[in-house]
Amino acid sequence: MQSNLLAVLFALASALTIAWGTVVRHRIALRTPKDGTLRSSPLLNAMMTPMWWAGMSTAMLAYFLQTVALGFGTLLVVQPVLVLSLMFTLPLSARFNGYRLRKAEISWALLLTVAVGIMIILGRPLPGNPHPPLDRWIPALLIGAAVMGVMWLMAQYVLKRDKALILGLVTGALFGYVAVMSKAAVDIFINQGILGLIFNWEGYGLILTAVFGTVVQQYSFNAGELQKSLPAMTIAEPIVAFSLGYLVLGEKFQVVDWEWIAMSAALLVMIIATVALSRTSTLPASPKSQ
Image (tube, rainbow, N blue to C red; front, side):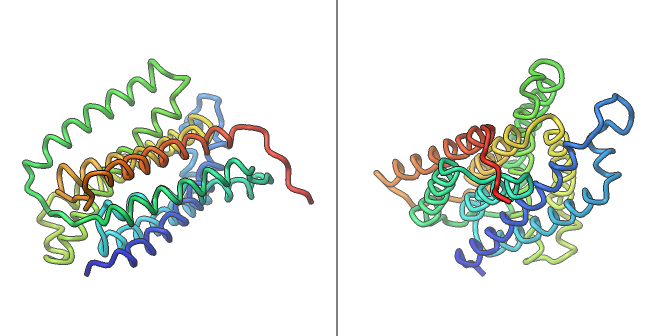
């Protein structure tokens, strides 16, 4: 059943849950020892912490809510709403660290919300084919693997100072693929049941990509401040999902002429607002009064 309203509501719930889980897992990453021992491995250290498993449980709940949202609406509806997870993450992070949000952060958060609303209301996305043939997937999978592999190597050996940013972009791209495969898996499950997932590759691709995404995300959290990695992954995911939704699934916005200008402006505002929020969050903040 197609219902953009239900898709938006479940996507909002997913964004809020993502925000909570992100703050918890990043706080764990900050406590990772840097002594070069086995326990300094970001993933192993995190897995030894009970709170990491609580954060992962939250992430799984967020993913479930996102999947439900995709069952009701298109990627072009759900993905912009998930960008609001950044807007939810910042106040939660400020709360945990004892700071107030600044007026600039609130203003950028409002602009981000308006931009998301424009893309959904003006765009009026149309569904495509959620289960396209494999030959439409192969170029997207090969190009994506090559680009993300090069970015991973650059983060490890060339651009170490920007490691958190680059790994954040890789994480967002991986979850962009996860979103598209989730849409395909939901359609297969609705129409063919569990057996459909067993006998189609999308379910296995979804699990593998989600595992890679989770691992890279933990490394990106450990590589630097949350303000460096989170905005990158928050913006990369919808851009990759949008592109794959258009090119692979065939989803479309119902816009013509000048409306494309408004849609482009809204996307640009989403990107600028996300970057601005990350920059303002690195400045000194006023402590909360006790």
